[in-house]
Image 1 (tube, helix red, strand yellow):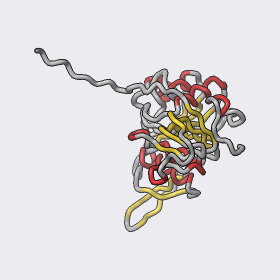
Image 2 (spheres, one colour; image 1 turned 45 degrees about the vertical axis):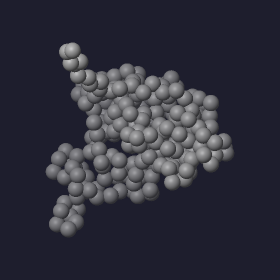
Image 3 (cartoon, helix red, strand yellow; image 1 turned 90 degrees about the vertical axis):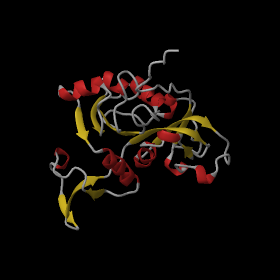
Length: 236
């Protein structure tokens, strides 16, 4: 990978990393903290048959939703599909494979993969379709199911700030699935709003150590609002 982690744009940061059939872990929650620049570059690359582990799949026409529209995703490992009409349509029509995973379980599967833990037992999902085909075991009188850790070929994440070593700081709610997604990738590419000089970040404020981050880009982000809710202005 070389010592220099900073790349000029998303396409160059992904150069040599993309191929058909990859398992990609993507950070973000809804459209908060999503690696939108890297997603657009993946779309433009034309790779297909992707499996993507992400809490959801963006929205129609934005974020991972772009890769659904272009039919580049074969399978989603997700916990929530409700904000994306195309996601629901493809799943219900049998065009898209979906591995439903409870939200906390998905976060822990990523974290476990990043920590070198191949699997763990959890009570979440016992007695539901989530448990079908999975190993069951009792602990302290309670039934648990075995969930496998996720190790992705590529992780794509979005952070607020980085230094040249790849130490990342996330802003508020964007610190959601991004840290565990970053750790579980064999290679992690991060896009950030600002790259600060080495030593500018207080070590106590770093949310993800640079050892997990292989490549960095800086860019402008759209920052859409997923559900705009307003109230009527009161009459004077």
